[in-house]
Length: 94
Image (cartoon, rainbow, N blue to C red):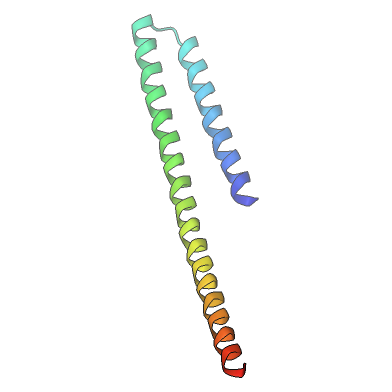
């Protein structure tokens, strides 16, 4: 839940920064060419920030997946070993 909240906060901050930057550039008294150039730069910066955030979340998800899948595999191997042992004991006693 904490990570979800943090992700929401980060996305909110990014959205707020994008909107604030856009409004600031649009209301600045400059020529259209310069305004479009600034908008393009801001859009590229925001895209890069969003990509960095996405990559960070992806890396965390992969890390958790690997950790969990390793534990599941170990558990499955233990269950298989226990079943084999039980079967061998059953065969001996039958």
